[in-house]
Image 1: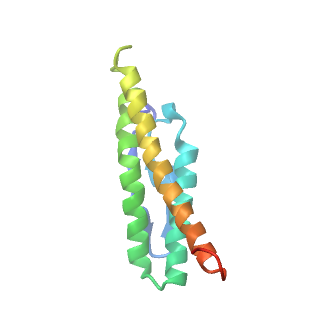
Image 2: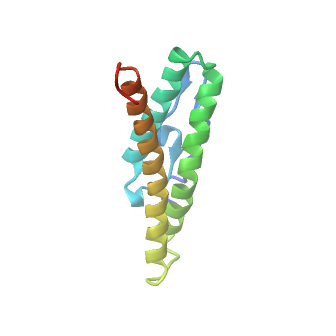
Length: 132
């Protein structure tokens, strides 16, 4: 972990507040993934909030779902980043760690792609003659 600041996960929401990016989840900056975490979390949080307005989902349930998704996507990134930042690897091990990091980032990409495809499908289904 980053020697100056140990990594952490915080609860991502409470009454009237929510956390995204480093505020809710921090790992060593060695992988340069912090901004991606923040943008991913902002997207997931926005979707959770919108679901309360559009579908009437209960706020606590929507925010808990946001936190669960954030944690699920972040756990492998956190563990792999920790392994890379430890410098306890040799030149034969680092390619495997970098592949694990790439695979964990792929999980984020897959989820965000699915969400976007779902949004596009819903939008085209609401236009007469589209989405068939």
